[in-house]
Image 1 (cartoon, rainbow, N blue to C red):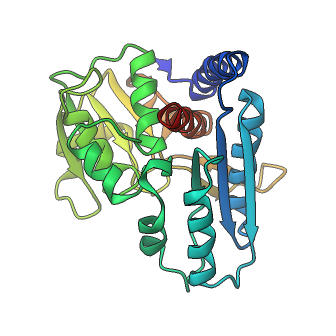
Image 2 (cartoon, rainbow, N blue to C red):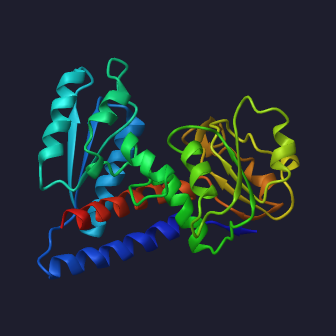
Length: 291
């Protein structure tokens, strides 16, 4: 069994990006600039956004963090987005999700300039992705593709089961892996909570992408020998033996499934670090488009 080490791979990608940024600066080109908007004080969102800001600093990007109070109205947030849309100094920006209940997330995503939508959530970019046209691919699916590529995992002709149909991971992942591309050409089944006889499907899978959001959902008796496992889930579960009172687990029962897998992502340290790395890669792409 080989661990798909997202922590190391993301560090390699950041190093490559940092070298490109140094070259841009050396040639008097514009420094890539990523902005992030966060509404409210959700702890997990703040931690994630701060990690993005630190990652920008590490690779030499400029970064702007816009913190707005939870009471910010939808109209006020839309005005903030319009300012970022027309600011030529900003190459790309994200609006951290989830948003407070009184704000329509889809309306906010629609308001973002697709050319600055480095999260890859705007319908224009989702449509281009579905048509296999050059565009921003949302960071988590993009990171999974990159991880599979860098570990030389063959996907062509393989049976892939994607568990979970979210717009952020499951649905785009199923489209990308079925497309004619280097990490693609697979036969993909998109499964979800209402799929009947799911173990029958997963036992046939050469590669499983688990993104259903249920802790340790995928068990050893649901997979075949030498399967490749990509675990997207991350959930805190109570653990009295830990000083902080919890541990992080994925959607895969790692201890038992890893004994049958040929490759598997750990949780944490697998898909998570790749997400930030690919957000930086999308921002670099936006910078080059604006050059």
